[in-house]
Length: 161
Length: 161
Image (cartoon, rainbow over all chains, first blue to last red; front, side):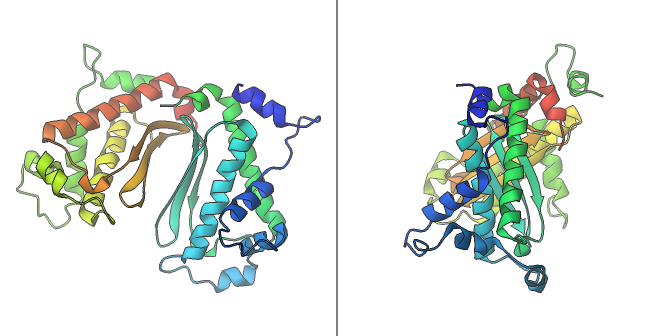
């Protein structure tokens, strides 16, 4: 199956892709839940960990290293983008997240030889969203941007080294 | 200037590119030498830090985290590949080196939306070369591979997000 037909197969009758990010993130979060701590929690409750109000965000100092919980959320957020791209296209994706220190960093997701998503990160300490809807919509738009890149350069996305 | 013409301009009359890696690495190493410790050292002496005999390599245990000196050498080795690609093509390159722990990791160099080089790393503790010639030749072949990718996909390399 080519990249194009894989993508087409998952689109609905209007040609729009169904949202896939939120579900992908929840699946990944639950997969990490080896002790069953979240078994009785709803998807919405699980995603609440990504929500920070403006006041909460401002209260977090951006000096020193971000704490390990926020680094974990950042990692799972972008890994879920990567996972959603794979679910939609059937292509292998490689996420690479590098925190260079003091809350700066870079995220890249590649498919074959194609960089489908690239973001520089700053103030990682304060990584979070206004609501779970804002979270889902941020992830969804990254998935859409990545799939758009694959559709424009399918030969590059298919080339593996 | 297009990517293609930039590359062509730096090739010699035989169409072969002049070696560029060794010099790029030395330049970078000297740029890091803020205290002038290497001022009186020859290029060859500076590069000796990358040489490990087979016996030396075997003597290094591959458990725990690699030491900071070897991580620095790894970083400068790949950054020099990136720098040499820029010198040859005039295009911006982004190196991203992620050590995921226990001596495993990944290196990626991108130009625009193109992954020009991708390597998974292991036994980073033992990173080194049999000789400075082996070092230069390893770097040179990565530069050549990267430029080859740019020549095959110039539109992707020129696309910036």
